[in-house]
Length: 423
Image 1 (cartoon, rainbow, N blue to C red):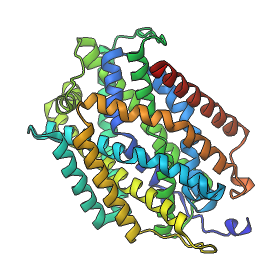
Image 2 (image 1 turned 180 degrees about the vertical axis):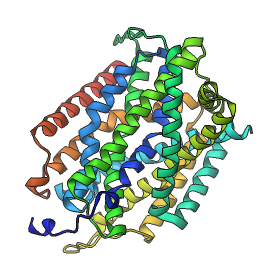
Image 3 (image 1 turned 180 degrees about the horizontal axis):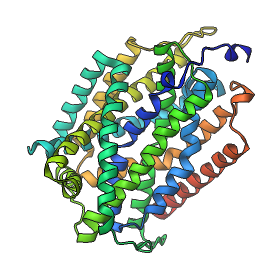
């Protein structure tokens, strides 16, 4: 414990970065696709669902950077300290979703690219091409490039989205009772669960953010104070929550109010998203924002192409580590390159053989993420309150109970969906 007090904690700007990476990774499928669809179909009817999802998931996401700031290690190492079997089970569950999340992110990126360029192509092959290009970019810049790109493009898109949402407000129908939520309505329940699954993102992002936080610490030579790390996280988290509401408002103001329904095709829906900006900001500004949206989605793709292989390689490195070996460095390792290659191939296969429908594929990915989210929430809670975390860095009673409430809510909703869907 004494050693942790002697670590150089630096200043806020040395800690700043992982929180923006969180926002960049979150502003993807959940925001551009699911939030916009929610506004287009239900108006403001699902506003409470978006706020609720961000609320109940907050502690589980927060524990990623908080654990890294407290221990200098990632949540993956926290899981490993609970027992090798815990990490093995976690890894088995993650392998099932890593590739399809990368594939879904690449699909949305490809759709926005084609909508911006005005070119019609097979979205599956375009998505695979973007995945390969993303890996190529990462191989040259790594974490530092990811950090810089995300800050720039997220800032541009955030300003434009907030302005466009404000302009949309006069067209919004201010009715909050537009949706009934009966358990017998499987289609509505399925969409609500899909919306919550990636709102603000899948809980895998908490683990990836802890890995990015550790990478930031190694790159800067500074482990941030808890205050600095949490300020960085809160900026990214609440920015992503506000933007989710903004996309809902734009969908409600531009599409729902005119009766425009979300297009089933990826490229056509992406064009509708870009038109949200064009309608509110003018064609010239809308085009600039459309390019920014494409670049943000590309940084989101780069984020998952960095985060998931980093997660997989860290798990494997821990499982094969010799007793007594405390050093863990996967940067530019054969294990990291192999993990990247494996996930690129798996994501490409998912795109070729699983994506028969854009909306169905996205809903499948987001529903799967939600159903497995209680497991990650439980592991994050246990890691944060484990003996490896010094007492002064553990969450207070409010966050502890908030985390437990989130676990109960996520578990209850996941079980309810499984029951209604399959029984």
